[in-house]
Image 1 (tube, protein in one colour):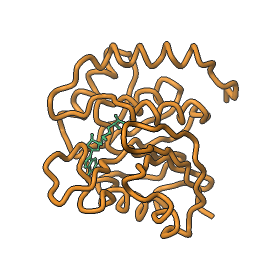
Image 2: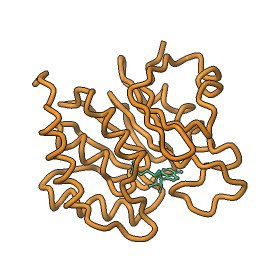
Image 3: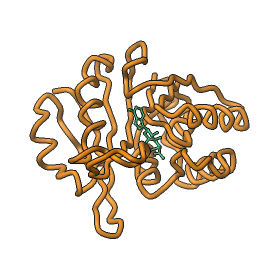
Image 4: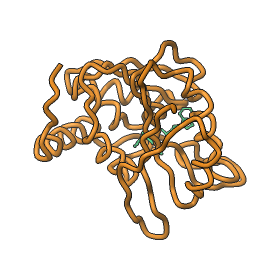
Length: 203
Ligand SMILES: C[S@@+](CC[C@H](N)C(=O)[O-])C[C@H]1O[C@@H](n2cnc3c(N)ncnc32)[C@H](O)[C@@H]1O
């Protein structure tokens, strides 16, 4: 196993290569945005080689494709079939393989993983109009689904990566899931909200 962490320049080159392969996603597919890039920043600090990784809600595929280029065996899921088709097309352009699963969070996904990541739709919204960004009344509908199933989907010593916004009251959320320890790997202020990427491990 290669335990040497890639340099910042190497990571930047990989991300640019992935963005070129993705091109402009369809209207219904989430385009790489501030939250995606913050997740990437956190991913850069994680050794991915040889890991079984599940990228929940892959959208354009940006996070799962990064993990695959970094040597992981990657399953990508989304509720949006077009997102999966476009991720597969980008993977083909990059000459890599990812396994697509059309799934509501983990529902249709088989197996256990070393690492599972989710940049969820988190905007508080009475009605879910846009599945890429709306997270229900408190913004946490899909985050809670992910956190509920994560313990049964991780191998021994596996861990998770999750994005939360200050709109979701992260301190309260963390307090509700005593089975996990949470470590903040990256933060960024974006207009009126602060985004946090948390690494989660079972206690
Ligand atoms: C904020 S976007 C993140 C996309 C991508 N991972 C990124 O970081 O750019 C959230 C993604 O979750 C997907 N999604 C929404 N509801 C889902 C569900 N129930 N199960 C799986 N994916 C879902 C959306 O289609 C969208 O691609």
